[in-house]
Image 1 (spheres, rainbow, N blue to C red):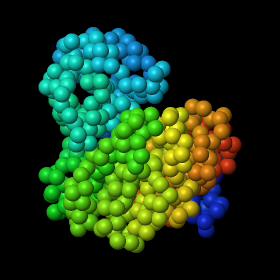
Image 2 (cartoon, one colour):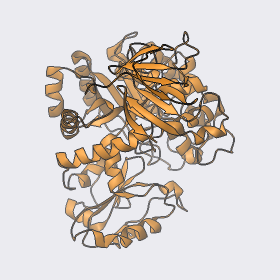
Image 3 (cartoon, one colour):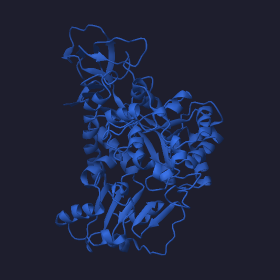
Image 4 (spheres, rainbow, N blue to C red):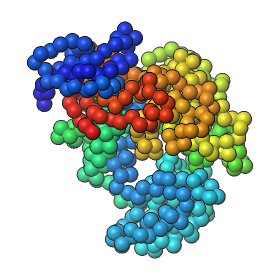
Length: 516
């Protein structure tokens, strides 16, 4: 679709380019930035009346389909007791035909009075007719009822040693989740397209112009391609393919990467360990609050080596989830075997949440990118000392340490695990405070980043993480006209006022895709 030239005037433009410190207007033509501080009489003009323009936000770790699915199922985020979850589901039980699965997401036992996983009887008492599966907020555990266990044929004596665990006969962690989830009715392409469309609406309303979708199967890929053909996919997507499915990956390795104006596939997603919240992140030393538990390894050394070898030989970027300090070390050692020092492969460690001092040089030596989500830190900090003890706290979310070592950090949110709001990510990065409790002291303040660094995490460095730094992530002539209009300048306003920032408009390819 041809879009008429557009001029944005009376703006405070943050270009993120040092040679362009003062810009007040932008000319957009054919989806590109045509000029800065120039005049074009024939262009349609929008007077922004002092609003701030930043490069379009790019969320470097996102789950678009899961966001749409989350919006359709029970939202359990923030509920402070298991009984309140039971009451919520029971209240709405009549809306579900007998025998259908009841799904929800977002519960967090650390918000409950005893901070413990629930017993099986809590959920078993809701219904004998409906299987129920409720996903923990981090996506690394499910809480299921008796009917779901019956359908799956689960036996209490089963031992999940291959990267999974079952607690209280109702909490299935990491690889153990598959023993339940494979019995949940499969989604259709229409389901996934609906999820994606719902997710996109929320995404653009948060000022996000591009996402790195951190796990895509064949259904997600075909759904996005279909929506693009229908001209119904108004954002950019950088896809990471499901690294667990060898048959799915074969044709991709044979045929190579996909790249067009809206959709790129050149990455593969793997999982090394679980999450700290469900005690599945792999640690060198045992959990402070769970004696003898060192977490889980979800991928064998041999399997991971084969995947890394395929990615390296076929030109795919490898992006591996690693949260615990040992989980990160295992990933780094395999990466180093193939990268062998300086390179431009841009292999990533997704989350890199807990890293020892001695591993930071390994990131630098092999040009490995720590892809990080600031709100993970500020969501988890309230229970972190309980989980790992005081002596290891300094290993958590080491943004400034990575930057001081010369690394770039692609920033994101891991939405829908977090809210997917770049303003909240920005606030978390520059303050190390929870947006829900901004009046406390900064947590591990030595790892705070500057406001420009935080903005680069969500724009310039996120673009770099997807090999797009020459066309996105800055505001310069010739770059894609992906822009986010803010109600104020987040680089200069008061710290507290950052949270009051509104998204006024979102442009992708010079097209207005959201307006407040």
